[in-house]
Amino acid sequence: MTQNKKLIKKKATRLIFLGTPEFALPPLKKLLQSEFKPEAVFCAPDKPIGRKQILTPPPVKIEAQNHNLPVFQSKNKNELEKEIIKIPR
Image 1 (cartoon, rainbow, N blue to C red):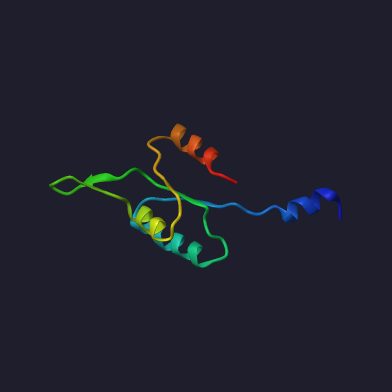
Image 2 (cartoon, rainbow, N blue to C red):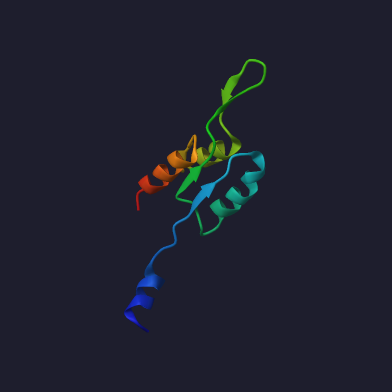
């Protein structure tokens, strides 16, 4: 086995989760129960909901916070890219 192949096998897989709505919860929950736990979660910003326009976090954010995962809420693609780069290794 070459030196490069040894390095590739030892390198850990890093995983981030991108999702916002309720239908993104089942895949996130499965990941949290597996050996592939995400290092961070990215979702859309909190939005005003209902007649009183109460600022409400998305379901994925709530689940991530319950599992003490860092949550990033990017407003656009450029901001998302900058946040991904900032995630500590």
